[in-house]
Image (cartoon, rainbow, N blue to C red; front, side):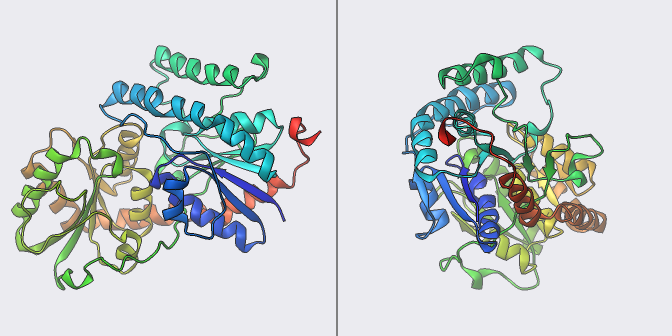
Amino acid sequence: MSRFLLVVPPLAGHIHPTVGLAGELAARGHQVAWSGSEAVLRPLLGPDAEVLATGSRVFRAQSGHGLAALRTLWEGFVVPYARFTAKALDRAVLDYRPDVVLVDQHTPAGALVAHRHGLHWASLAPGAMELGRPYRALPKVESWMTDQLTALWLRAGLPPRQYTDPRFSPELLLALTGRALTGPQSFPEHFALVGPVLTARPADPLFPWRELAPGRRRVLLSMGTLADDVSADFHARAVRALELLGGEVQAVITAPPGSLPRLPPGTVAVERAPVLELMARGLLDAVVCHGGMNTVGEALSHGIPLVVAPIRHDQPFVAAQVTAAGAGVRVPFARVSPEGLAAALRTVLDDPAYRAAAAATGAGLRSGGGARTAADRLEQLAGMPPNGGNLLV
């Protein structure tokens, strides 16, 4: 039996895949614990999960587009969260004594602590952007990001000459995507593109299943929890697009209470929806989303075509991959008109080529093995000789 510590940010979309991975590891007899915000983790993991809490605090809301959004992400979340959790993570490692630390790329403090204690560590890439060098044409941006990470490395008291980018473990990187989306680009051998890790989530007894009208094509509209600050106008345009589609389409919309305009008759609006269950039961014909890797991977794994309106971060990269695969249509988040969004929805709903491409792309993603392959690779890492370090001497 090995002990695995999963270091995750307080973001549901990053936590959900670790649940399936942890379940696979536990089924093989291993011990698994999480480190992060218990206030966010506990409702998602349940009462029996072992959580080594790092504490909770409010971070600056992510906003903007392009490079402005990148700066907000790093200065408003990644760097301050790493500083805030560093001491707690150090205590967690000393108390739990893991064999392997799995570190989400948005929580570099986990990698720094693993380095300090000479532990094996793996990177978890829940999105697409950090697999390559998306800003290779902007060397000043790349340099600025490296400076942020180097400062965290030095703040952790690690030797400058041993600097390693804490987003990229030199031993193992698990990416929740696959070549069906990334294309023929090459990756190092220790990069494992395992595809989506899907896992059942707690049933929602409040979801109004009876309101799902038989005989109507159904669209899920979900713009993600981090899009609340900019989604109100998009939701208004999307609702108008649904009106233009008429009674042939029923929408299921996930959005904060009170954030939506007057809805067309029959629309189901909820704060959270049992998305995987809707997909697995064949109750969705298309998905409109922001291009988050989780939603995209889930939809494609179930052969559902997409309309993608990317907002920030890796979402434009994911949207480009979806359209290149022929599995969806991309629309401009800030500028798409109700007529344009309605036309995009008609395209993916009426043209069977999009559903066929979604099914083929999903099959390619699933071929990565998901939780099974990820657990195989983590077990191999746990079986390697110790790196040595302060914890082990």
